[in-house]
Amino acid sequence: MKTISGLSNPTVKYLRSLRDKKHRRREGVFLAEGLRLLTDARESGRVPQMLAMAEGRDPHPLLDALIAAVEDAGGDVLAMSEAALSKITGKDNPQAVCGVFPEFDTSLERLDRNAAPLFLAAQALRDPGNLGTMLRTADAVGAGGLVLIDDCADPFSVEAVRASMGAIFTVPLAMARWEEFLPWLRGGTGQLVAASLRDAVDYRGAPYAAPCFLLVGNESQGLPEDYEMACDLRVTIPMLGRADSLNAAVAGAVLAYEALAALA
Amino acid sequence: MKTISGLSNPTVKYLRSLRDKKHRRREGVFLAEGLRLLTDARESGRVPQMLAMAEGRDPHPLLDALIAAVEDAGGDVLAMSEAALSKITGKDNPQAVCGVFPEFDTSLERLDRNAAPLFLAAQALRDPGNLGTMLRTADAVGAGGLVLIDDCADPFSVEAVRASMGAIFTVPLAMARWEEFLPWLRGGTGQLVAASLRDAVDYRGAPYAAPCFLLVGNESQGLPEDYEMACDLRVTIPMLGRADSLNAAVAGAVLAYEALAALA
Image (cartoon, each protein chain N blue to C red):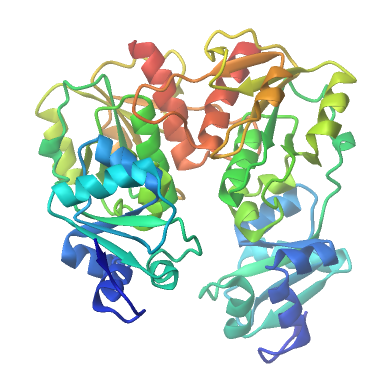
């Protein structure tokens, strides 16, 4: 373990800079925060290359295990003042701990369409909280992965990683343009199902077939019409109130649990 | 319409101060932003007592209708610089518009348990985005209301109002301590169903009965055990991955759509 002092220490500045997408991407790494999330990562075989914590932090067996794993893997464990840690995490929590992980490969080839009956996909999803929540749901339904289509929020942002509650480490994640995704999907078995308001059947009792790719669209626009028309099935969730749509992550989860039961 | 100039104008300061919970509560009002949301409010019979917009904003028939409704009701319509409006809304959007509404009555007496087969309830829900999303879901499933139990996030915060996508204006909202809620519920018909990990039956095929009150707990703690035990039914959603829970608003929605289908 190394001890770092001062708020303007270059390592503190480096860690702080990783909250910014531009710096994060240039470095090819991302930040994850919290002992529970870092423990989930460790138990999934992902160990941070750098671990930052406050000096004099209360001992904890999970923290000890994490420190040992990072040191065994040749990574750096850094102790710093609470003020320096707060500068990195943006939170006043002396119990905080954060780790730097290398970005994952997010090519479509990461997905194994035989790995699970269900996959989730989102197109132009803009809210990092919704994105992380979809990852969390994908984990919960045992999905074979989440595909992010076109320009989505950054799945490696601090907000998305936090909302994923560790699922960023466990759910295979792929990112692709629609023009890449559709040929990839059509190159093998796979049913593409759109969450839709147009020409759609009720989501309950719809003919889901494995491997089933459930696709939800942008928070305010939904899916482009031509994307929906390229899908094998369009399903809709009944809306009994004034609003015409659900939160995108909620819609994905309601569909995912229905399809899961249908495919079981 | 009045025109206001300067960033330090007292009305601008007043509006800005309403983003802060303490000031908001003292004034007994809340802010809602966006033409679509304010139109939903108007169409639901809620007209802001004060409407703020940028000078020289592009005309729009929905904005005209909103201005007319506010003026007819004796409210104030204020035009100001884009900079002043940004100070209030926190956004650089010259198309922005925001309104000040009186807080609603949130007593349990607002709820009519005969109004719908389904009601949602949340205990100690801390995230305003989750709270707003639950309101949006409550609207979508035609729920008779949302009950906020114990110390929840502020449903009238800008974040919750925004996430509700207008459902703050359409879904009856009640706030109560558990010690008030339980006797109220038991004073009439009503099945209380806990989203649970303990001693619970599968949420699919569970014996839901109208009026059904679906209760979800705090984001990190879930429901206190004694609350769960006071419920008539405990249901659980299968978790096939590493995580042991879903996002609270997601869990509420998955349960709500299942119960809705069962009660139909």
